[in-house]
Image (cartoon, rainbow over all chains, first blue to last red; front, top):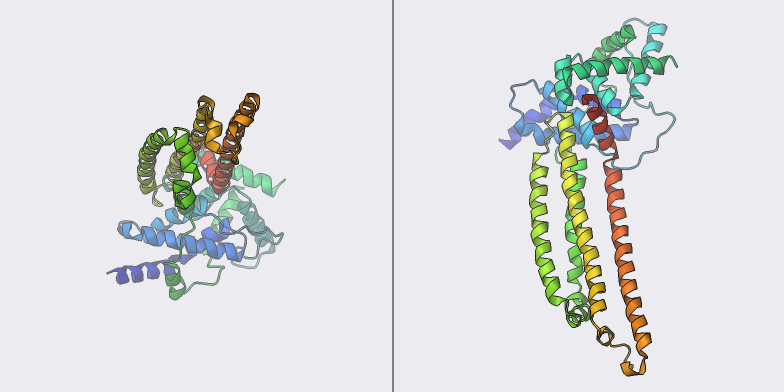
Length: 164
Length: 221
């Protein structure tokens, strides 16, 4: 039974690992930290897995655990030196056709998002993952109205970062 | 701006793993690794706080050596026993409360409630530390008090075989006062030091969590 549980879990996580990687890339700055956070999220997911009833999609359930781990439970295991080149793993820009202006714009946007605080990043992450405000508010434990207000503030913040 | 964020969203949805994709075995290997979550740290530190003070009783000198005799001679043995019993009853209460709070913590909660529960659990630990430090300080103060009311305190110290009668009364008073002062100062200094270390430790451990919690809470006001 537990072997089967283990197998199901690993299979599900393997095919949905992209979500966890995105969270890790958003919240960490180098490869070691990325791996470290990925592992912690995996452990937390696995510990909570017996409570996963399958009434929600595995991926939906993952968002909450992954974000909770990143903004609340995770603590860097050793002090990491912040280097100037902190974009060793960065988002790969995938513009449909090669468009230098668009690519540059996207690079700047990703950089700006990485400068946000932990909570703002969580909101942006859920927004980018196409979650609606009701899901965002449920995941973070704030009201829907406040989630909207916050999202607008974040847009302003990003604007300030991009056009100082 | 709106357009840019929408552009980002479009690009984001197409994002693949930038990181080397992990295999079934990679992930499987992670399942049984040790977690280093904040909750785990709080649990471990609490355990150490609970156990370490009791190592002191493992040193033979404490239970059969001079310390005990001194307490007995000072007439402190009984009050200390009563104090110990009260102490352990309260400690048991704290362990029970800590366990209850600890159980409530679930990664499946929403972020705000998860943070609130961790902070509540930490508060239990904080109260326990306040209590322990108060008891610690009280032990010292009890010794000071008993030195004060015991006239033959000097005799109990068995001052290097010297005949007490040879020492002038004034000098004896001075020694007594000095002893009280030293015990009191040591008590205050050690309490402050231990307290400082505890709060520094927790402050560092929960700095990020507190900041994130404040951020979420500020939204709801």
